[in-house]
Image: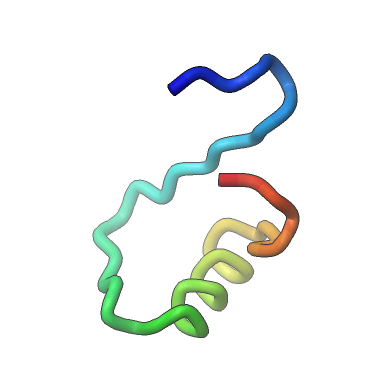
Length: 43
């Protein structure tokens, strides 16, 4: 899959993550651990 340059930002979280914590838990992880807005369109 190829993305046009500068159109998408992709962030990776390097620690083990429990995906059973539902969307609310993953959204909280994104906000607090990565310091990013989960609704900004990034991947």
